[in-house]
Image (cartoon, rainbow, N blue to C red; front, side, top):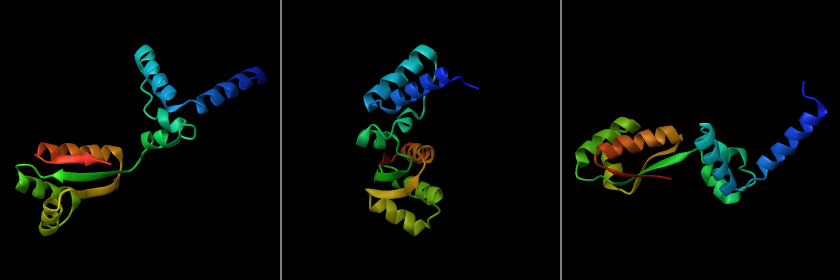
Amino acid sequence: MLNDRKMADLKQFAEQLVNLTVKEVNDLATILKDEYGIEPAAAAVVVSGGGGEAAAEEAQTEFNVILKDAGASKLAVVKLVKELTGLGLKEAKEVVDSAPSSVKEGVSKEEAEGLKKALEEAGAVVELK
């Protein structure tokens, strides 16, 4: 069990962390990574209340995968959109033909990055929002 002095020190430290600006959080993340080998993946989430709009952008949890252009291999992109989304061939073709268009919405960062990578490997131009 922590004694009262340690508890007060920890509370003061926690208050300092919560009041960091987004720039200060980024600087802290760089220090932790470079000097201590710690990768603070969710550093912006910790202070999302103190950073305003910029912190909210950094703490984004849902992403939309937007097909900007099918590129030269349109048929391969249509097949991939069909496979990745579960759409029928006609619907997948409509998504590709109407680019820029949404391929998937409200997905996790990992899923969005995976979809982007797969579509870009097929020749498409993709944006995450």
